[in-house]
Length: 269
Length: 276
Image 1 (cartoon, chains in turn red, blue):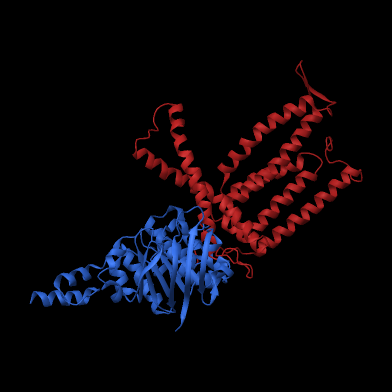
Image 2 (spheres, chains in turn blue, orange):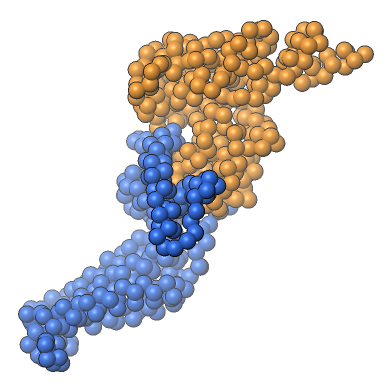
């Protein structure tokens, strides 16, 4: 029996990686083309629900608020107070006036970003990287590009491991990491040289290894141990996403050219 | 059976090195045989292993002369990846064998098969077989970066022979294993060799070399100092002058003044005889 990667077994984690990539693109597109922030807000709320279904609510909340709050404050400040579009004053601070148009524009940008960030977070937290690369490779991604993705993601744990080996070796020979902040930081300086140099040597050895294991053979289509299944639910999800994107784009274009009346008074602000 | 590997007057000097790592080396390896390369550190054993799988000249640059033919093709004319269909190398340092792209041991084992386009169902089957044989079936879902040195060595060995090469080059591939683990690996090597796989091994365990090898080649400072059957090589009185040890049984038989023996069973018989 083949080894399975253990992610929380949820309807979201069971989706094909390409479905999740499609969701990022289509949801992002919907939020982008919609004339105001409302659809983005609805999608962000929906993504919070999806994060619960995917059993990653705490990670999701951390990322969304960790990014969303500072960006919102920054954009509200810049656009709300200084946007040239501002005509309707909603608050007067004396030194500057908060304009409705700038605030709405900032809300639109924030929601667009959060839709992309939220959908990407859900994909990355519920998809095994090997499965993602296997899906991308079978969809036509070059095997070398697939390797680059996997190797880049694995480089951090690998360097951490190397660093801990070098640190243990240096500790055994008297390097002290205790004391104040500066002495702790100083203790890391001797580690940097060996870690960087050994990583460079590793890169050369890795190249040798990969080739001796058949990497770069040109006349065969690479296969993968990691199984990714395209199920009916993926087919349905992809169709729903595409139809939704088409409808949203059509309505948005209609609103922009004035064929369809704006659904909210501030649309297009 | 004919020669599957032919090394013809091969010399190589690494770029920036003062002297040649190997000089005018000539030998051939019969298909299905077990060929051992021995010698002191720096004798050129690993250089020769690298040359056999095409890492020289494709990876290591330097001055090269002579030819290495693997299954009739010059390694200089093939890519390393193409050569991997015929010849597999197990590195001295098992951590160098890892692809660092696999999240699990199973994926690590299957990596080479994926590059060769082996269908997934066959891949799964082979991973299971090799994992059982290597006694790593209980760690198939572990991250290769979290394994002990011995476990990585088993994974490294498995990840090479899973590709079913006709020639297996083992460059001191049991350095991280305890004696029992090392013997287990060599039991597998023996089985593979008995099934027709040609094995070229570099080893410092002379008892093992004497026991398993069909041919032994002694390298000294990059040159062939001696080549022949284990008996021919180890019974030569001058062999230790080339920087290699002899099996303890050879020393024993010399001490007892009898005919030279190189393996355990005749040595025991000789000792019993001497005690009577």
